[in-house]
Every structure is written in structure tokens, then in C-alpha cells.
Image 1 (cartoon, rainbow, N blue to C red):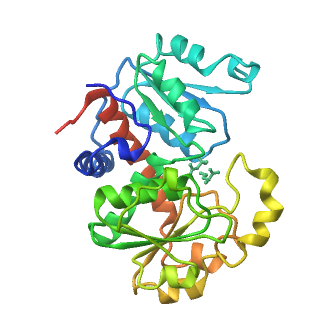
Image 2 (cartoon, rainbow, N blue to C red):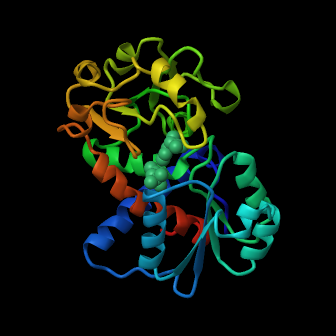
Image 3 (tube, rainbow, N blue to C red):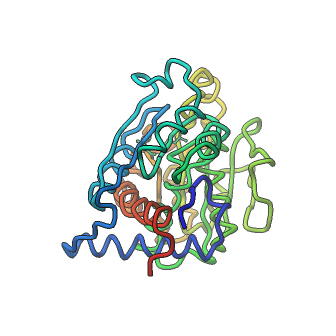
Length: 302
Ligand code: CP
Ligand code: NVA
């Protein structure tokens, strides 16, 4: 059964758990030198309307390692950049490729792709969600510290795509998400799954107290660059630094989806320090996304 992967809350906690366990198994297999090529003869088409390093390289490498081939389409250089609609683009490319990964602005553009595609579409980041990154992050947490269920993750910073996907994951996988953002940058209730998995803090330090994982992201996400100067001022206190890590649980991890701005949302001593697992986190994009692509094309592989 082929399916889209547009946001985490489209799935049950059990399905996300299945994908996470497959990610770990597929990673082990790769490290053991096993060949696993279920996508021989298949083509992944990637559509980027925003910049990327990790998403581009991890999806492309992953699909090649699973036996398939990849086409990379950027808005500049394709007819999307000359106003061909997403719907028409979907109708055309889904007659050729077997799977589409799209990075775009509003979730509505991703839905337009999915609703007009004959093949599964994966969210490679929208303004609202970054679900593939969150599965890689949880895989990373569990590799280092065991099951995330019952733990506390502290989010310090913008109410952005990463934070909304973290909140969804908390509800579905049974952990607590502590959230702190400056006034004027609070969560949009329309995107926030309500429930006791989410705790809101005015003070970023209190947000980190007792956390098992502290995480943040850029103050200004792609698409919001004109707000940069204003955000720099507003977010100055929402920086993950040694004080945040000191009030977190002993052994707490630090994560950042990257790219990072040292001296803004995180200090260099934290991101380059012993509690940081950002390079494992970046690598796990490869493994988690292989499991997501497998699920989208082949369903639950046991
Ligand atoms: N974290 C992440 O998605 O990185 P890129 O923007 O480089 O793809
Ligand atoms: N929130 C960031 C994540 C980048 C991977 C952005 O959307 O730009």
C-alpha cells in the first residue's frame, strides 16, 4: 500500500515506531556491509523550492543505496520557477517517477503536489513541518539513551516547522515537549496538537530544567529572511548555552537540525561540546529516510 508522508500526525504512534525500528535495522545492515536494494529500477524525483544540503544529499544517497536512481529538480531551472503550477508539475512527474520528495513553502503547496500525484509524496520540509528530520532526531536520541517514551525534550526558540513536528511526535510517541519562545513568536494553535504532552514556558532556562534532550533551531527560517533583524533582537535570550545545559538532566543531549548559527541560537561550547550529537543526528537523516521511503513504497516490511 503506497502512501504519502506529509506530516507525523497522519500516522499512528505504532506506525512511527515501526518506521523508527526499520531505520535502526537498515542502518545496522548498511554498517554490516549487507546489500538491500528493493528500489532497483525505481526513480525518486526531488523537488526543491528552498535551499538544502542534508536533505538533498541524504535522500539522494539513500535512494541510490536502496538500488534506485534520483532526479533533482530545483524551482530555478525548472518550469516551476516560471509559474507552472504544482498541480500540473505533479501530474507530469508522477507519470515518470515512482516517488516524489518535495521541499517547499506552505504545506498547501505540498498538498497540491500530493493531491495531484499518482505516486507517494514525502515532505522534505515545509513552513509548517519537518517530519523526516524529527524521525532522524528520535532515532539519534534512542541510539544514545534508549526509548524516548516518558522523557522530556526542551525546545528553545522559534515556533517553526521543527517545533510543530516535535509536538506531534511527543503526542504520538508518549514524551513531553517543553516549549519556550519569546512573546510575539508563540505557537499557532491551528498547528499545535493540544494535550498534556506539551508544556509552555516563558523562561528558556525553566524550559530546559530537568530535560533529557535540549534542542533548538535557527531564529529565522527559510522564507522569513526579511524578519531577520527584528528576530535577532527578540530571540537574544532564547539561546541554548551552558546555563541551559547545566539545568537539564545530567547526561542530557543537545541536538540541532542544522545549519546552525554559533553565537545566535546556540553557543559554540554547546554545539561543539560533549553533550552535542548533531553529527550523528545529521547522519541519521540517511537511515530514517530510507525507512520512510520503504514505508511509502512497500508498506510495513517486517
Ligand atoms: N536539517 C536540514 O533539513 O538541512 P538542509 O536544509 O541542509 O537540508
Ligand atoms: N527551521 C529551519 C530548518 C532548516 C532545516 C528552516 O525552515 O529554515
